[in-house]
Structure formats: C-alpha cells, structure tokens
Length: 90
Image 1 (cartoon, rainbow, N blue to C red):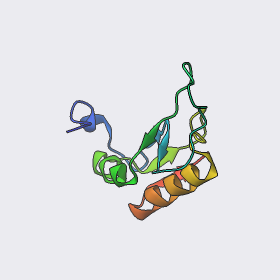
Image 2 (cartoon, one colour; image 1 turned 30 degrees about the vertical axis):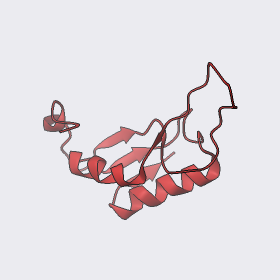
Image 3 (cartoon, one colour; image 1 turned 45 degrees about the vertical axis):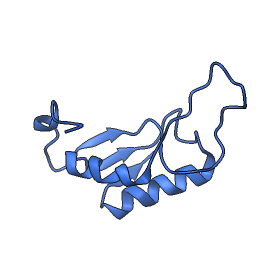
C-alpha cells in the first residue's frame, strides 16, 4: 500500500529508484548530538521487501544520504537489497 498510488508505473525490465537513506539499524549517525539542522535517514532493513514488492529492480545509492550511518549503514543497505534480489549502483 505504500506505493499504491504509483505502482502501475513501477513496471519494466529495469525499474530504478533512488534510496535517500539507509536500510540499516544501529550505528552512529552523521548528525552530532544536539544538532538542529542535520538530517540522517535510517529505515529498518526489513523494509527491503516493500521495495521489492513495489517492483524496483535497481536502487541508486549515490546521494547525500548514502553514509548517514557510516560504512556500516551502507553495508547493511547493500546486504538488505541483495537479500531480496534488488541490485544497487552508485
């Protein structure tokens, strides 16, 4: 239901999305304690299934939020996508 308004457009041999954040848990955020103007996005790795169910086949990770939770967050993101057969780039 997350993509219910657009899922009709998420079809094809290659369906590319841009993941603005990480599919990870734990780890240190890039934002310092008490920061008032910093954004770090972290989504549970289990949400990988919703991206797969929506029809995505490839996720771009090359953006300003790729390292919101450091190298560990990025490794977890790649692993979560791989588990459901979504390739990644960037």
